[in-house]
Image 1: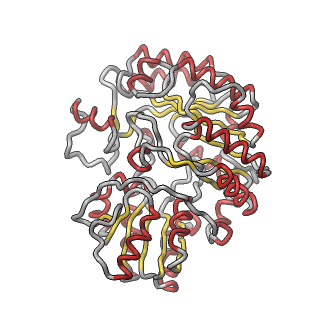
Image 2 (image 1 turned 90 degrees about the vertical axis):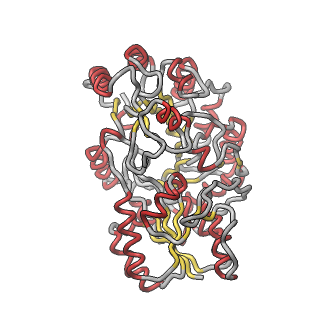
Image 3 (image 1 turned 45 degrees about the horizontal axis):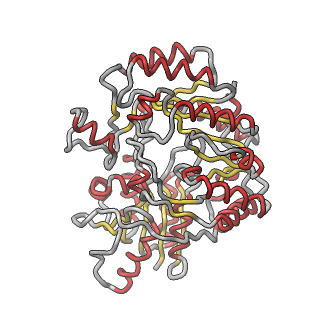
Length: 449
């Protein structure tokens, strides 16, 4: 079959994200099908899909839905209308079977099937599209195929795939030049799944709670592939890179052994690291450590079910700085248990984390299949029938959003390294200008004070 996979993501703040997932899906299909990828970010206009559809004449069109919205309460953007426009364009120009997938779809399969009028969907890992195509080719029933969704069928997430997860055709990707020219950043994955129990997080639902580790040597070969493709930086897309400490260290050692030369970044839990951990990471090329810190109040961290305490944050921060890394912390204010005292404890405590950047989000996006969703229903902030396609945010009953923002703005005054949200359109324009001037990577290090 001829299969057209569409990356529908248009979010470029804080930087454009290469559609890694579609590389894995395409590799799972290429042995039996003619596969092409169309990337809306690279095309620049979804109207340019039409000539691709007309010339390729696909039998199946797969739409990958990465984000439903930007999760920023202060600068909300929904992407559903854009997805509707793309689906409408597909339906108007081909009779191909329309299949949905991606992390955004996995969170809202029933709603997105209805809104976009798709024929099928794939919840969980997109490589399962191969099973659907096999059934279609053999004209056998699709009901009961793990992960395959119909408008009226089951939408349960199947057991995670065991792997391995292939990615062998990066150099032939038509959208590759766009990312090389807009920051030079590509990405790779060293594991799937997340073992943590953070109350707001969707990763365990999307990828499963059990970690599936990619062989360190395979991850290193993927990094070399990015390097050969012209990447000047890569980001490791694992939910939390150090969720398996020994494996992350083995990956770093494999990078060194393989001769990976380009810098990279990753997202870390700010747990107290073992001796020499970040020194090893730095020797392997790590330059940017992003910590999911959320709060410096232990009571709030406990309510968030985080696997660390405030003391651990300071230890991780110190170790990263001493290893010469650029450091940023992401803070989530206003969740369960937040009050005036906890906000003040966090904002005052940040003065003890020098030479870094702070990104603040002042409310927690409520997603289905999370403990936060259950809390919000119990507290009456939403009902069980509330559609969460329209973003809804959890707010603590003990302090108002205005109260949080007033305190945050007071502490942030005059500090360029205190960024509320993702920085909005102004930050996007600054980043775009820096990329035009030849800068590469995430660029937030230029805000460090």
